[in-house]
Length: 392
Ligand code: GLA
Image (tube, rainbow, N blue to C red):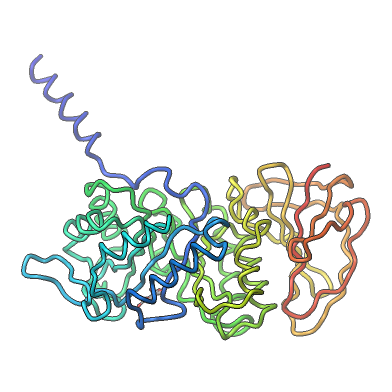
């Protein structure tokens, strides 16, 4: 009898101690800013504080952006006990002071490390130091950890990332865990119990139609859309909106596509120096509502005709977001009949839109009538028409 009770107690204890990702931290795709796409390695505490100041004051915070994340290059070595040391020349006040500052602005603080021995910029990585790093992150007040995969030869991603997940859990602070193994080991198949989001591809380039830019990455997401869901997000990488390689139109299209995918929205531009038009893109409340829709369904291709693709995203209120995308460099004519079946091949659903939906133009900020008639017009090269349909 005594033996049985001991066994039962052990089993209950084991279950209670079993680590897991912190539940409920990302019911909608995380929104914030990350230092990498604009500053790369050239970060310091003043720059990061200026970004937090900008986000708190310019309307981004009100629009839902929360996290200020420092990427690679904040760390320099480890002390004799194995604890990570921040680069004092760049962060003279220390990481805790920076986290406190960001928190004082009503924002959350994120940090970067790597599951390998060294980060991608050859700073100390987390392998073998997970418990110490997680303990420090919790003490500093970290709310979000991006965890990279460089210098991980011979390691198994699932093991390394689960080790860090467990360490974070034991450290006792709710921290969003953002996996960044670039889709190399198909995290969508195993990471929903490990992290809250996972990168699905290699790094985004600051270009639209060429290279590993916006369109290429967008296309790489379609085959894995069924894995996107609340608290477990496909991450097609951080935004290049407002950066030098994209025109205003391309930035707007990029933002639209990320909202249509229910992707994490991590701005990657200089928030302190952006112009009004870019700020309006990043803070458009209707676009963000599409991204943050609580169903978390990633869009699928509805139709393709005359150089225009129609992508559709079912929404929680029974409505839809639709993006008409013109990938080419020249204008294309739109003449679209709403009343054609939309087949979702991955969730095995069929949607039939009747004539009774109102059409709201997100970037034009105006009503465009109802779905009883064809929608007609012209879409510029590399532009989108982004609309929200609501049942009247
Ligand atoms: C990798 C990641 C990037 C960035 C850099 C930093 O390339 O994918 O997003 O974090 O490392 O070195």
